[in-house]
Figure (tube, rainbow, N blue to C red):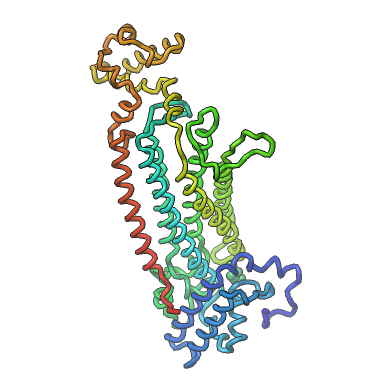
Amino acid sequence: MWKGRFKEDMAQVVLGFNQSLDLDWRMAEHDIEGSLAHVRMLGAAGLLPSGETAKIEAGLRQVQREVRDGTFQPSEALEDVHMNIEDRLTALEPAGARLHTGRSRNDQVATTTRLYLRDRLLALEEALHGLLAVLLDRAEHHREVIVSGYTHLQQAQPISLGHYWMAWFEAFTRDCGRLDFALNALNECPLGAGALAGSTLPLDREMTCRLLGFDHPTRNSLDTVAQRDYMADYHHFAALFAVHVSRLAEDLIIWSTQEYGWLKLPDAFCTGSSMMPQKKNPDVLELSRGKAGQILGYMTGLLFTIKGLPMTYDRDLQEDKRGLWASLDTVESLLRVLPPLLSRTEVDEALARAGLERGFALATDVAEYLVQKGVPFREAHWKVGRLVGWCVEQGLHFRDLTLEQWKEHIPEVGEDLLKLLTLEASVARRSTYGGTGFEQVARQIKEGQVRLESLRAALKERRQRMAVRLGD
Ligand code: ARG
């Protein structure tokens, strides 16, 4: 293939080792888009004999059809997607020999990968919006369902389960922001950077940039072919998304155990045991937690690949795509399976309440009640804590205590305390902005719906801005 300076053919063992078709053939259509933009620019810049622009374009369209209908079988001897397409084009149309004018595979692969990744990330963002919509729906559905909130995995205070779902709405909305950052970061056009130093030819970088829906040509040719930060930006999104998924999965796994038991997972998303007939296992959630670990690994894989590389392009960079594809496939699979699972989670409310009533989840409410009676908080904390200790010794709960017993231990207590000691009152009264009070949760949901609408509108706008403008 490398006619010219080479005196022998590539060793057989090197062929498979060197090729990257397993990583880049999936980008064939995006590679052709990049070439179509490049050839139009070459024609407009007067770098092609008259008539050849149209011939090359027609040839590329033919290759595009062969890729789409699967009749194009790429060859490992031609190394990668770029050489395979150029080779096929030139076989169909000899003018194809001019296509690579002013271009290197180094700026080409960066362009193709950005185009391909852009499409995947736009689709991912839409799927993420689907997850946000499910969380809003669950929050609405469970707004008045009271469950325990935990710190240190110990019962802490009663909360609206809707508030819990809205917590994840916040986290995944931040993930959307990180995904947007990655999308914007990748949207610069590498074409024209050449192998590393630009070109002696009068290439119109603005034109290819515009045709491919990029925001700006990349600003430094060395950096263009050397850097993969836009991939790292995606991985950063993916890593935090995975951490969120993993923690969410962990909660649901715990809450659906026999020991907690108040969360009911849909049968269709659980599995049985080959031996124990009674089992209903949360495998989908466990797999989600497990896959999250791999996603973190893909990020560090890329960072390690890059960290010691001299400026500019080094062949190590070909490996950048391996973990990227695996990560994307995994994130996409999580976004396929989690929304339908979450949309069918239900609660055994009686069990959730029974669990709360066994503990002392209203202790903070009593301390804050005493604060309103003028007791300094630290003193109130101590008094209530001492009463809790006494109850534990006696095998009693707050709801077993008579007003007299309350007063005996805490003289500041009045009759008005008892009506505050219900789970409903406890949740409803946590009405600080962002708190679990039912009204606050309703506000979060309402604002969340508006935020999701504007995220969707922004995605639509982004799709238009990032659209390839090559016609058919
Ligand atoms: N297959 C290569 C990659 O994915 C394309 C660039 C090759 N450039 C080079 N100078 N060998 O990175």
